[in-house]
Length: 586
Image: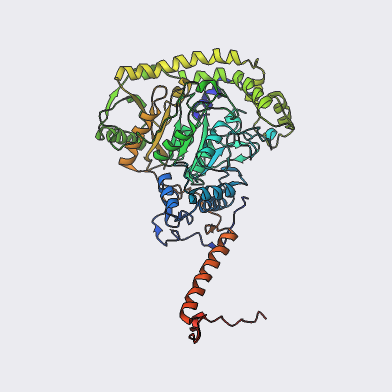
């Protein structure tokens, strides 16, 4: 739920450590250094480099090239990300982005490494670790939506998104914390809080992480995995992506199946990638989109390679609509104006429109449909998607369970109670949401028609509620940082249904021409996270032993060649080949 929507709700509704193998510790005061020994200027993230590869700035394609060249393995990547999580999330600033690490992650990575050695590479995600928001179903980990009432609940099957990622060769590294039940527990509950996971802290300032996909946003910003997955009903992918200086994609409702995801409002729910660059967002969306018989909204949808349309000149000849009164004031306004000028320099024609001003709070009217849809869809999920033995099976039972734990559900549960008071009728939900969807789509359609444009460009989260209520796609990309407040600034592209290929192409062209994203550990961000320790990238015992044996064997071979061992009259071994004298331990 976006901050704007939460504010509107307050006025409108009555109140009522991770298992990681560490082999060495170094001081956290030095510059970031990888095994190559090359420092990264102005960054004190000692775990940023893995064998010379920048985990913050590398794309999935860069990682694939290193994997193909056998510069590293997928197991190495898993260990490196686990070391980062141990340093920044479980200790140090304790960002609390991670709900749980998948105990099978290293085994998954080892299997995918074996496939690669055998000549099988499934695609651009092969061997890359991903973190999923903890409302996305996994059969090898609990799926809880952050609720203590659902603690330990393991679904009967993977969510469609999870299965598609597995099929694409991604390593399911674990789950991220979230705002409980997609930020639908209490009006008083802060972004990023859940009764099961606690409070998530923002990556850049240890402040508000925004949206319900807060853990995914922080994990993405901190490079706790190659990419993350979030979900959105209204603003919950885009808002944490903006504040995390990420590329976020909120797909058209129906492009990505919601099957196996704990629902909030099926009329508006969707899932999408949160990444550090547009290329990875396109690769992930290509993997997770497509038809699914378990989700009627995906009927007739076909898969697409969104990487194919990413070209540096994608903005040339494009017409984009924008509303002049959407511009913020001060330094943020200047940055937004500069971003618009860059779009023009890249060949786009920007056309101001007046019709967007009439949309006002149209997108926020989806709120009316959520309580009834939430009750209906959550009860259905609990009845059909979870294994036997769960302590609760209805929303009413969740509310009753929560009432016994006020120390955890400490902000109240007024939104759950409001929802439980509705009929919980799925048919009614479709009717309620239909009115909002039609009005919101009209707002965007009219603006695009007025400008004769193929896309709408806005500042940050200005129009995310409108696009979410319309069920239309949104892509956001960083444009810089406010020099006074260091707030993260973003440009956001909107379009009509299933226009993700165009929006990603526009965002890519802008990104390639600017490349402004900076990691949250750079000194310019005064509230930046600090590691509890700078643990060297871990190496599992069997890998270490294997490396030692290989080195010893190589040395033995040299010694045999030098000494002529095995031949008569062989030379005496050189001093360096003789076994060292054992020193007494006493």
